[in-house]
Length: 114
Length: 116
Image (cartoon, rainbow over all chains, first blue to last red):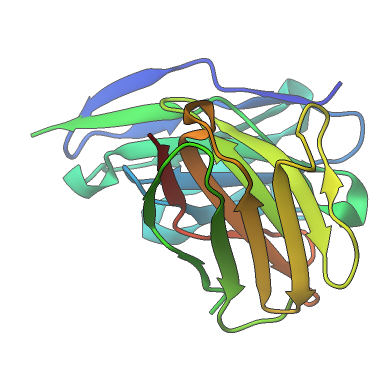
């Protein structure tokens, strides 16, 4: 069955430090992969997505993610975290071909220390 | 581009009443809209998928008679929670997908429902 695992429930980093949020997926075919960010009480904003091609994808707000097929991973990174990055981050895999249904991980809450 | 709105953002209602939530794609035509439910500190759970002009497809365990979904136009889908009860209190989020970019869902800001 398809699934997405985000091993870290909560991460705290200092402002200016680098960040890596982990995501592993289980899917039989080539996946469509997404990272979304959710601020408290808000909907989800798309940070970046991977469909094919270059395995390192750039997103908004200085985020990037790397698709590693051998590890079934799609980790999110940012070289220098800002206080405004504090939020909940969800990794998702698109399944069902053109249906585009998403399966979400449980999310990782990011806190930023001043 | 790809903006999705939801209305209302907050709603409080009495037990037994019905509540309608609207989801609109503001700058694109949404051939498919999705409705999710999110419990506190948890991930999103897909409730149903609706394609314009056809009946919604509900996920297992979601009562179609309780959560009525209508997708009458390419820019509007509605979710009606009928005879709401306190256990229906939750954060409801819709998303939309257009013709030009069928693999990507764009999310609305969500609607917080509190049933007293």
